Length: 371
Ligand code: GTP
Ligand code: MG
Image (cartoon, rainbow, N blue to C red; front, top):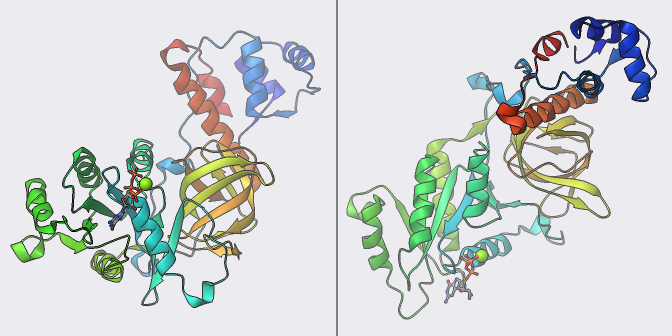
């Protein structure tokens, strides 16, 4: 599967094999009647014969990973680190808080590693890891969700105690609620003389975020990102929420995850920063990322360390891609590169088709049923 012979193609197009072979020669492909053609070539030939006005429907493949449900036996699941996003209004201190958490929690074993921007980072507290997506703000979150990627387990909403609940605070609350993820409120800038954390709590009750001491179930932590006050407490609260929700994944299978960021690096070529969500990603693994494919050549973590393997909730930067995927793209490992390539080709054709939309009316339908 994934191809058809010249003879089969000719039959489907109601043409002589010799006509198809002539077109192929015209396209620079030397082929015999029994030769297998790849999807790209099949499309080219089809369009040469002006079959492109027909709607091309590709049958949904069982292995098309966006349609595959994860079926894991309970006993195969292991606890994984929670994945946390920080959101909040402009200037309320998201970046400062992320930076403060990151720099206060470099364990001695990791000292000396050079911090890398890989779209997310991990900190360790009480021998437990927490993964933070390091693109603060709503854009990343909104875009990921728009693309169907659910990567966040917990949202921290930062509200500056000297400012109050602002439009983007409300937006953040709505995002978190829509994604059905638990919210922890970090009331920030409590070092400021005009800070008034209780006013914030009061305002947030309007959005059903009621602190425990007022009979609600929302965790509030007063912090100062600038002075690094109460950051440990905030991290402990994250671990508490994680423990209650018991986030798990099966590490013993092929990896699957989401592209957090990707770009073309001058030296390394296409690089993708990926959050592994299921299974374990290994050097040499063949994968599909969005419509692109590749084979993991090297992996580094947020401390600049080279990794051989990355288990669930680990963010890694990988090289070995053929092209640059998009943020929010699904990522999945397949048994070999051939398979990965075939899947990525299918995905790009599908995308082109949905972009062409209603304008495409070809019946290559038949054709693809046979590929
Ligand atoms: P955007 O990315 O623009 O949305 O802002 P942000 O939410 O990332 O805020 P950022 O971390 O850039 O902080 C904004 C300003 O508030 C900076 O000048 C910080 O130094 C200051 N700031 C952040 N946290 C605190 C804090 O705990 N106390 C005080 N006093 N200032 C803070
Ligand atoms: Mg910022």
